[in-house]
Every structure is written in structure tokens, then in C-alpha cells.
Amino acid sequence: MFAYLIASGISTGALYAMVAIGLVLVYRSTGHINFSHGELFMFGGFIAYTFFVILGAPYFLSLVVAVIGGFALGVLCDRTVYRPLIKAPALTMVLATVGFSFLIKGVARFFWGAREGGDYVAFPAAVDPTPIPVGGIMVFPQQLLVLGGAFFFVVVFTIFFRRTRWGKMMQATAENATAAFLSGIRVERVYTMTWGTGACIASAAAVLMAPLTLLSPDVGFNLLLRAFAATVLGGLGSMPGAIIGGFLVGIIESLAGGYIHTGLQEVSAFIIIIVVLVFRPAGLFGIRKLRET
Image 1 (cartoon, rainbow, N blue to C red):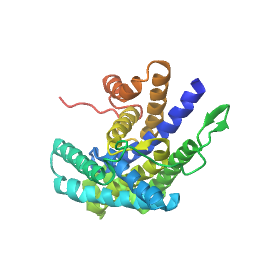
Image 2: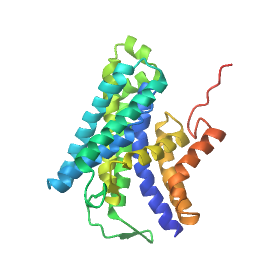
Image 3: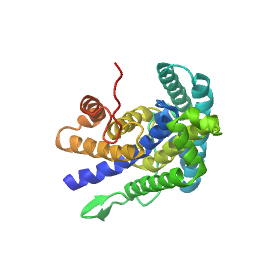
Image 4: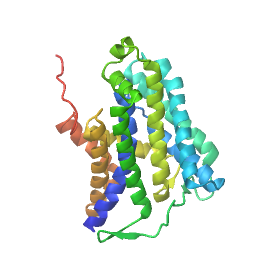
């Protein structure tokens, strides 16, 4: 049982890690948490559902379309929410992104909600759903696909930040936006690219994970909560911390539900956030800052 719970936690944690990467990407560049990020995940999943299930398009093409649609939605979020409020207080930005999340949820409910049997829709697996033995335990091939997708994005973004011009501009903007602007970097374009890229990752994660779960217009909030717990655990603003934190949240959630009570799966993210904020506010890989008095 322990091995199965660990395997299940790792596959779920890979999803949390992918979504947390998008959260950290936006936070590092703008200094704000995008609280509509969960709805970007949900909307990307429904875009893929429309093409793959309703229109009968190939899975890979549906993935590509969902990623492009996610990027467009992320850019829309930047242009309509972040850009007009770029100098507003942090609380204003929180309320604006939360409001945008409800707008996206309402649009999704209008087009894909209110179906027979409820708002939940099934997303067929991209590969043969028959479980296969791996290391003495049975796992679903789609779980391996999720792990592969998470590993792919980790490698891609490592190369992106270290080798590409856009990646270096994003890092420079994250460190000091004013200095980046004075050095000739188009900071506004970097912000747009950042919001779009974060939404791309969320959409890709949705397409990979949807066959293992059910899609609904309300799925975004729960996922955002767990991804946020992963970023807090790993250290807000730390990309490696988001990845490791995502896997840890998935494993803790799986073990708590398997050995203690299934109800703990729903509240484990809250518990993780509270414990980390009390005992190590900077997270596992965060940088401690002195509080001015």
C-alpha cells in the first residue's frame, strides 16, 4: 500500500509542480500571485476537451490548441487585469485576479456546464488506460505521461532561463524591473510574455491530467490551493522550490488520505500552508528577509 500511495502522490505532485511553476513564473516577474491561475488550468482543459472529445481532433493537436488558447488567455489577463492596475496596491491586484477567475469560471459554466449528470465531464485517456506494473506496483500509463510532461517542462524552462534571451530578460525583470527598463529591456513585453507562458504551462498540465480526473468549471480553485501550498512550502519565488514543493504536497496528501483519513486530502494543503508559515515563513528554498522595525 505504501508504494502505491507514494506512486500516486508523485503523479499528483507532478501536476501540482507544473501549476506551481506557472505561479512562481508570474510572481518572480511581477511580484504578484495570479489567483486566477487555477481557472486558466480549467479553461485550457476544456479547450482540449472541445477539440479532442467533441470535434474528434487528435490528442496532440488538442494539446497544442489548448496551449495556444492558454497563452492567449494569459495575455488577456495581463492586458485587462494586471496592466491597468500595475501601480495599484497588492490587495487590489488580489481582488482583481480573483474577480477575473470568477469571470472565466462563468464563461466555462456557460459553454460546458449544466450537462446531464452534473458539471463534470470525462476526458478519455491519450494512451491505453490499462494499468501496467512498474517496480512491483500497478500504475496508469497516463500517470507516466504526467511525470514525463513535468520532467519535460522542468528541462525546457531550465534551458529557457539559462540559454535564451527572453529567459534572461525575465530573470533581469524579476530581480529589478527599474534597472531592467533602464538597460533597454521592454518590461511590459516581458510581463505579457510571463503571464502568457504561465497560462501555457497550466493548460498543458490540464490536458495531461484531465484523463485521470474529471473536468468541471470548479476544478480550478482546489488546484490553485494545492499549487499555492507547493510554492509556500518550496519558497515563494523559488522555481526549484515550486517543483520539489509540488511533489511533496502530492505525497503528503496521498499518505494522509491513505493512512489517516480520506478527509485529510481536502485539508492537507491548508495544514501545509499554516505549518510552513508558522515555522519557516521563507519556505524550504526561500530567502529569509529581515523585518524592518
